[in-house]
Picture 1 (cartoon, one colour):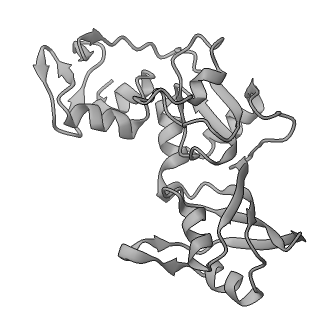
Picture 2: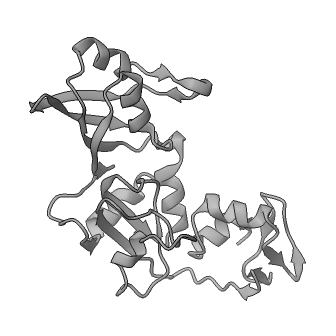
Picture 3: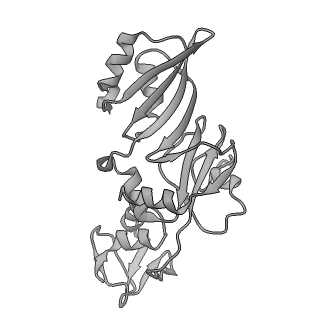
Length: 241
């Protein structure tokens, strides 16, 4: 079966499709002993020899993927490694033997639901803006924003450097000691998006927890713990692809 090189690599569990595109552009992929740097290059997995950093890639259609839901605590990087030696989410998954990688972002000081997998196609679907997969957060902010400010934010705004935030759903759940607890639903995944949204209305984030991605909920998983997604959950995610 002929398919695009980056799609094949993602399907083989090398990394997400975006990361596989980066590997190609960086000259780390060879096809039939020749370096390929053009995205969209077509390959035939049954006849072409495909290597990533010298490692021969063999992909079977019946490959078993892993799907893990982690409740990420604050103080862990959402990455596979860190040059400064800071803890990463993989430190919480040391008994997981498969090579998996995080789906999307959850910054160092944020916590909550993080899906990890070696299914590159699913990763691509869950993180591509066009798919509009909804993420739900519980956010504690400093002070109590007015209804007017929340309304402005929910309609979408443009921040510094033409950083555009699409419309979102924002609810004031309660107030505690002069601070507000918000529930925010977004369909984007831009870097530090919710923190920048809060800064825009001058109510800075004190705590940020993701509780849901698409149909998958964090319920029942304690901080620092994880579980494998069940068949029904995996099926519901794949409907988004």
